[in-house]
Image (cartoon, rainbow, N blue to C red):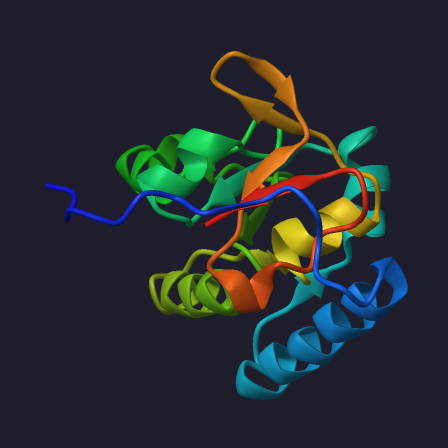
Length: 165
């Protein structure tokens, strides 16, 4: 059962510093995640966009139901769905990529899954990096430029995206 949460805040305008400053702040956060999870292999947003065109990739969104309800990267499934169909979905030749807002939760998830024998990459910078690479999102109603970030501190999306938390 989901806990009761406060209504989502919307940030139509991004933080004051401009896109270049938001990208730099996002990259600093990514370096912190990489330092905390040096054993977790990653793929960049640009690398993932290129790989999606030619490789068998399964995206696992480890964010909460509320976050995924705003939008997901197209084709992504929840961690719960992934684990329920683990044997079916972890097939030879398929690359599994986990993501969250910045990569900390998905790195922890990838580490836990590695302990269960599942090979998984983490999307470096996760949905925030995805925006800076020009990535698309899907809402339950169709394509969207809206995404849920973990909180105000993570309001670092590229211009043209609407963030909520």
